Length: 355
Ligand SMILES: [Zn+2]
Image (cartoon, rainbow, N blue to C red; front, side):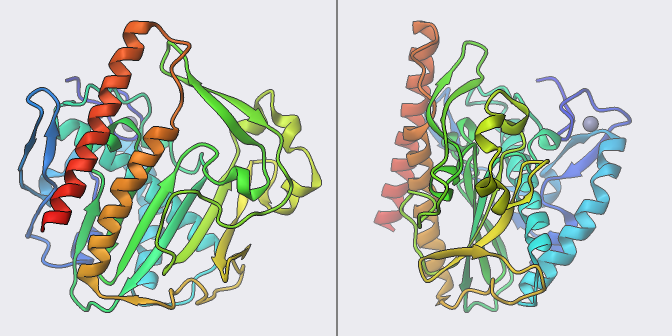
C-alpha cells in the first residue's frame, strides 16, 4: 500500500508520525509504556479473526510535518477539555463543539489506522482523511459514567469490518467515562425538524446521493432511532455546512433552522443536551449539566456498551444507502461485504453472550 498522510491523504511531505491515540491521552490513562490490545482483527481473505497485540507506539501513522503542526493547537485545546471532563468540571457549549471535533478526529484516525494495520483486508479504499471529516456531519455523544477509580482506555467497535465500511459509531472509554460517539449525514436531522434524507443511493463513483425532504420544524425525542441505554447524558450537534452550499440550500433558509443554529451561514447547529425526554440548548456559560446522574459498574457498562456499538453498527448498515443505481457486479460485491460485516458483528455478540 502507498503511504499517505492521515490528515490530508497525500504522500507525506517531510514525513512525521501522528499518534492516533495522542501521547497525552495514553499518559492520562495509565503507564505510557504499557501494551494496548487493539485486536482481534477480522481478515476477510481468510474469513478469520486474528488476535494481534500492539503497543500504543505502533499505533502511529505517517503524516506531513505541516499537517501535524496544524493540529497541535487543536490537540492542546482537546487535552484541556478531556482533563476537565475527567475531573468532572464545568464545561460550556463551545467546549463540547471542540470535544465533538476531537472525537471526529479520533474516529477517522482509528478508521484509517485499522485500515493500515489490517493491510486493507476489508478492501476499503479511504476516500477521505482526517482534515476532510472534522465537524462536517451531524454528531452525538452519549456520556456514561462509572464508579471505577481504575485508569484505562478502551475502544469498542473500531476493529470490526462494519466500522471499516461505515465508520459511524464507536465507543471510547477514558477512565471513569464511556463516550459513545456517532456521526453520519443527517444523523439527527429528521427528529430535529431539519431537512432530512428520505432515501440515499450509491453512485458508481462510490459517492452517496441523498433524496432530501423539507424539515418539520419541530423537535421529536429521541433524536436517533437506534436502541440505546438512556442512563447517560446525551449531547448532539447538527452540521449541515455541505447542504447549504448545494441545491437544497432553500430548504434550510427559514427561521426555524436559524433558531437552532449556532452559525447559520456556516451550517453549524447549536450544541444540544437531552434530559427528561426533552432536548434543550447546552448552556453557553460553563455548566455541570453534562455530568450523568446515573453511575454504572464499570464491567457492566463496558459489556452493555460493547453490545450497543455492535448492534448500532448493524443498524447503520441496514439503514445505509441503496445500490440500485450501480452495476450489478459492484452491487453484489458490496452486498456480500456488508452481509459479512453484519455476520462478524453477530459473531462478536454471540461470543459476549457465551462469556
Ligand atoms: Zn498531510
